[in-house]
Image 1: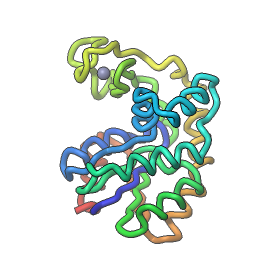
Image 2: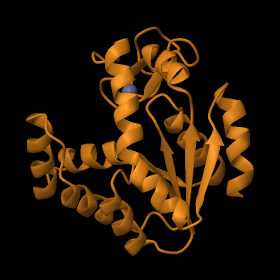
Image 3: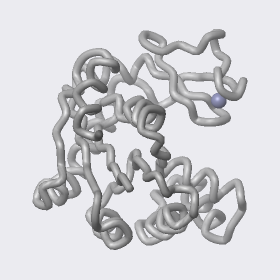
Image 4: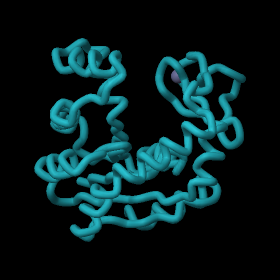
Length: 210
Ligand SMILES: [Zn+2]
């Protein structure tokens, strides 16, 4: 069973790499966002707790995120393995994850310069219904403003202005550093050059997974 963990700052193309890996290696892509959304939709007790935090604009606490991820990873549909996108975000989460899946973990850090990340993010749009991500430069929806997957409305994220984007990039790097170091120490971290077109970046990752 393959257990892959994808890291990358906003704008690194990490989500797209997760999609490619899911397609070619039959691994289920799992993001914290998806897990939260689905718990909220199912209106579980944990889902309601998560929703309260999100609605009040605060971060969902570690222990709750860890519990929701643990529940998700213990579902019976992941026998082929999975690729985690955006998780773990903290050292606590990383250690909890190793407790669930100590063997066969492999982490990838997709590195991209701040300049390139900011440029990509400013052309990014999101489906307001299913969360699918588009890019006006590299990956526009087939019909302008309409999601290819669900027909939902595709719009620009309202926090996507240059200053906010730069800020998110820096915060990510700072917060994730301890987690990156953790996987580095365990010798299961691969650093990937994330510059250039998505297909090129993927070529650099692909051979390391098989
Ligand atoms: Zn959609």
